[in-house]
Length: 177
Image (tube, rainbow, N blue to C red; front, side, top):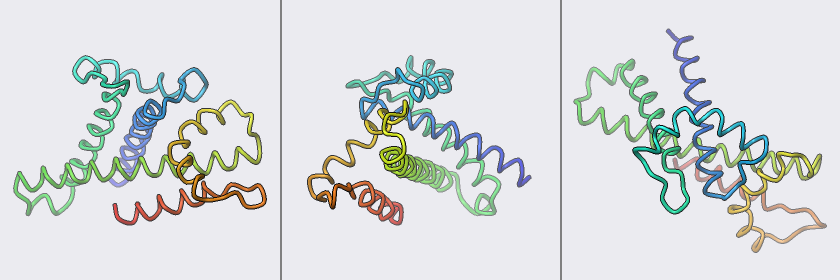
């Protein structure tokens, strides 16, 4: 049973990451024309396109992608709680509230992990291969976080420490979530 749960968690987490990445890329106005964008779109269209009929995009934001993430997180949280001893002692409303809280918490944590990963990738690419095909979309994705920090954190000997500060701040947010 543990192996089945592990595999289910891995598959759900993979697709949640893709749906959330699609949502975040649209928020940051990242182009989907490159390899990363094409990969994300091809692996998420199966759920996002049908959901768009129910959940329309507003202000250029694809809310269907976020609904897909929350739906998968709700299913995973429901399964986890249904298989736990807590399920025997909780009433229906309490169980539903716990499932909702776990799903929202999981979505927020995943978004923070995506941003931390993108910040690390951006920092590594800036040193190793700044002209990589993935560098431009990653830079666009992290720009909304780094631009305000770059106004506060000065360059030190030509080195930008704002990604490090951003990662530390995101880690602090993770502690509270």
